[in-house]
Image (cartoon, rainbow, N blue to C red; front, top):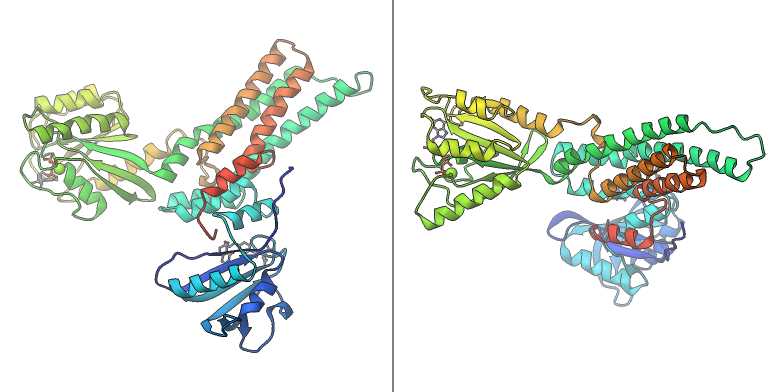
Length: 464
Ligand SMILES: Nc1nc2c(c(=O)[nH]1)N(C=O)[C@@H](CNc1ccc(C(=O)N[C@@H](CCC(=O)O)C(=O)O)cc1)CN2
Ligand SMILES: Nc1nc2c(ncn2[C@@H]2O[C@H](COP(=O)(O)OP(=O)(O)OP(=O)(O)O)[C@@H](O)[C@H]2O)c(=O)[nH]1
Ligand SMILES: [Mg+2]
């Protein structure tokens, strides 16, 4: 890789700004230890420069010019290459308020440090070879994770699980490329004759692996961003009650007046590790009320946009024209039919729903008695994980950048197969194989260009 980064000394506040127990300022670069020594006085008077790596040293930060003491702190010393960035790192732990943090940072800037860009510490960890690009992106996913499952995906990526799958495919490609190149360069020599059929079989295997990863991206995205779940149904069936039940709180207003919910409400909820973005919609019916009409239109558009629709019916009442309208709207969607109020005497004829929505599961619940909620949650989970051949969460593709690179790599392999099929000269096959190898390299940051790297790290937070 032809990518050079100045290794000047950078500093940033690494903890959120607010009131907290402790705040951390991070300094990284060749001069970081000498720089901190200028403003830090250890209780035992020894300079950090004389201390061994991975020491915590108690002392005070003061302004060398005014001699004013700013805060009492603990400094942690990590010498290169044994630190996060593989450079000399000092972390200053002060009291967690904005004044000590800002004053210490500005002193460091005054004494020669440069303010770190967002993600610059992790970028250095990447450029200095501690982690690859997929692992670096996982660091940010860990910080952003909101549920157990999304955290598991991210830690799987950070531990290199995902990257090693990519590396295996790349190694296999490189072996094929080398073989072909030897045959092209030394046609007279005793290079093993290449059996194209055998090569095609091996490419096919690699393509299956890539496609498996591509198909995991849908679940990966859901675990990262949340499953957009719309609760729809005619007025008064208990949509808002279900939202509240899943949220374990009284978020939405529930009354026995049909048409209570006028606008859609969106809430984020962790359902057994799966992040759901639940939308409680206005009951769908013919109405002359102008405001309610807008709600109904919105409900329709949510059915279109949602990843999953929970279609609610009132089990205690006979089917109405409004119910059949709902059925018509959800028939071809990824939907679960939920029949509510199972605690009451049942009057709903389900056979029509069963016939019309033959692909949808039907679940009976009572939001009041909390019946069937567990089964509903299990069904949602099954839907999220369905169709994945990958079972280890650390292998899920969870970002668009990786997905696009995988798709392009798959396309190049497809092209290589076509060329082989049509007896196109081997040097052209090699070009396709090499393009696929390069695209996979983008994912782990082996072949990727500088602009893309900058773009990726610019989305990180400050101090990371
Ligand atoms: N205080 C602190 N906590 C942190 C970090 C940090 O940089 N500082 N991390 C990041 O932001 C994460 C941990 N990641 C890290 C990864 C490697 C090394 C490191 O110094 N590795 C050395 C020494 C390992 C050893 O003693 O065996 C090495 O691998 O050579 C430090 C943190 C989360 N917690
Ligand atoms: N018996 C019984 N009543 C329920 C159940 N779930 C909801 N209800 C009642 O049904 C009525 C309507 O509930 P909501 O949650 O407001 O219904 P909604 O579908 O949001 O209604 P709109 O917002 O008007 O479209 C309320 O009186 C609830 O207490 C249930 O499981 N059993
Ligand atoms: Mg409602």
